[in-house]
Image (cartoon, rainbow, N blue to C red):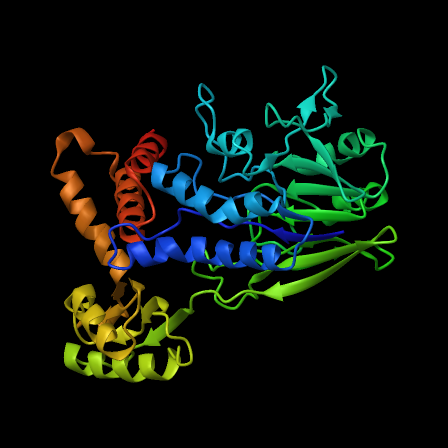
Length: 415
């Protein structure tokens, strides 16, 4: 049996209100389409998705339609696509069918989800083609079990998961990270909590963390594999290998091989403007460092940039406006999307006497505090309202939230 193990595809991800919004949106579908086409060309037996097929649970109708178009070649070729839900796939309003459930009922994926017994145990019912639901499916002699995302206490569920499985040649699809290897801060388990899975499953197909890694037993046998995301989803992933596993099952053994994909170029760089006495001098230093640090030659796609401006300068940091910097970047590297973090410190005239210097963040907080204090109803709540204001600003600037998410932030932070 041959199958592809991919995870954390994040269809629907883009930079809203950005000039590169449409092209970035297409990146994730292009990446999945490439994997699907390879699977069809090589006539493999199955594609398994370890969660986070979508970037958000409440996707746009156009995202659903594009997903169907992308998965259609698998359906036409009779190659089953086995999937579980990741934390990004969940919808929190359970009064209607989810997009993942809809895909399963329409035959584009086979969504695996266990049921729970009265005593808190797990039951992996056989997958029902008519309802599009079930927890277990057998393909090519491999028994595939799906669990999805179960949250921060995942490690405590391992014993009950193993008790529910009585077959051989088992594979577990599990959307969970391992603390030792994954930078994800929620939904992880400890390494020692994962070891018992190796006694029941020959291959544990992980998802959740966007960096690829392999888990071995204390004896050194690999048993759990996390492919990471095949496209770069967030800044901070620029140095990770990106790809998926092509797995061969033969004579009761799983043999995975990591295949690299070709994600869009991404750069996260610090630009040091220390000593610049005016804006023009700072721009010259900015140009010089960008040319030296951002080199996407050899790739025709426009890069994604996150630049952090650091250093002490002799002019007000606000004078170095984002639009002016973006205009310079368009001339030099023509990025698809850029995020600029201004962490410059102002060298004040009082600095020589008392060592005072103010960062842009400090100045921003002072301005907000003065504005908030002018309203008598808000006095005494300055700190919490400053935090809320900055959280909203950061969310909007990042361009990665919609109206509902902003309202949720207001509701969370506002209390």
